[in-house]
Amino acid sequence: MTVSVQREDFDIAAEIARLSAADADIGAVVSFTGLVRRMTADGPITGMELEHYPGMTERALEAIAAEAEARWPLQGVRVIHRYGALEPGERIVLVLTASRHRQAAFEAAEFLMDYLKTSAPFWKKEDHAGETRWVDARDADDSAMARWKR
Image 1 (cartoon, rainbow, N blue to C red):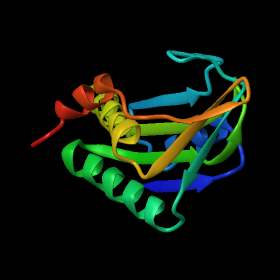
Image 2: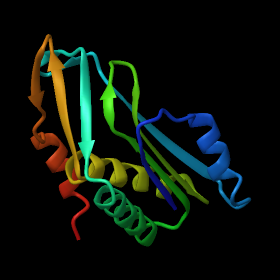
Image 3: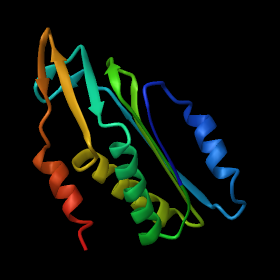
């Protein structure tokens, strides 16, 4: 399991290759890449900024990745989350899960993304034509996360 919180972009193909090369018993790798949208529910955006607390954020992501590994039979997990100023079309997040079978990899990837959308210690603000607004959690994201409660 590896977690990175970084300013720099990432190479999706290289990350998948690195994860899948680690174990010849991997039968499925699921990847999710989140991008900055140009249009949101509040209208068009020209950019966004993601903030976090160094150290605390990495520990929180490592804890949730460890929980995914405890819940599903995974051969590997890779989470990369960017911070800083981002423009529409740029990559924000990469979640990779690897397992012998696809169902575990798909479910673990969904679990990780639901956590990242609702509980990860990141703060996002969007620039709407010069007006900057903090983004609040959405009810739909909270509902998605609720299905994973034990």
